Amino acid sequence: MRLVRYDDNRLGVLRGQKIHDVNNVLDRIPASKWPHPPGDALIAALPELRADIEEMADQAPTIPLGEVTLLSPVASPSKIIAAPVNYMLHLEEARGDAAINYGMPVKTIDELGLFLKSPSSLVGAGEGVERHFPDRRIDHEIELAVIIGRGGYQIPAERVFDHVAGYCIGLDMSVRGTEDRSWRKSLNSFTVLGPALVTPDEIDDPDALSFRLEVNGEPRQASNTEHLVFDVAKLIAYAAATYTLHPGDIILTGTPEGVGPVVPGDVMHCFIDQLGTMDVSVTEPAVHHAAVA
Figure 1 (cartoon, rainbow, N blue to C red):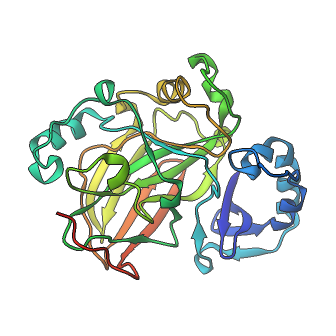
Figure 2 (spheres, rainbow, N blue to C red):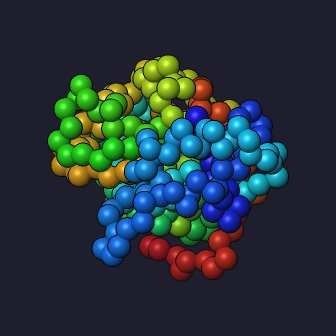
């Protein structure tokens, strides 16, 4: 199943190039009272709602995919967890390019651990990326995104896939500089998720997915998740060793070599095998930030 969120927060099932509107199923999400439990309520209820969603999709009116604005398939993650330099060739690239490392030492994922991005940075493919700080280099980083379904803490590695709701294409945008990663990667629109949340039954092996990114038709990044330093299971277990994971939490698995700058007017074409494609535009923000030294 492929779930999309679009336009004014409507829910749909993507089949081919058609969206089957199943928005009425949202009325069946169990109500909660303040303080609301952390995480995404739809993702938490998905195991109980899936049969109803698929039945509703069979009878639902359809909308062409190209006629909607795609939002992030996950609406309310409690956190976005990211893996730095989790491909060896990107590690070598970052160490050898001063425009990426800014004179700072580039360490391995074993040394750095994971880092967090602000949930307020999350957008969908149709919303696009804003180029903050026009005097700074903004880079694209395509990544496989893992969406947590069932929450947990200190999950054994052999059971982590029982906690996965699905997978998405992810873009981890970055302002290059000397500041902490969490700041440089948490600006508004700097986490793009889409086009759909694809449930695990549609994915043969998350550690064997080819992917690529082009900018205005120019090839930039191309690799396969088989080259991850920490594979998907290890990343989930590593995150759950110290964070309590909640439904809807997002784990970005890392980007390969080929990262590069984008400017307003550019369109990033993203592809991951079995997950599909998404086109993401780069725009000027409504309000420019002041220059940062």
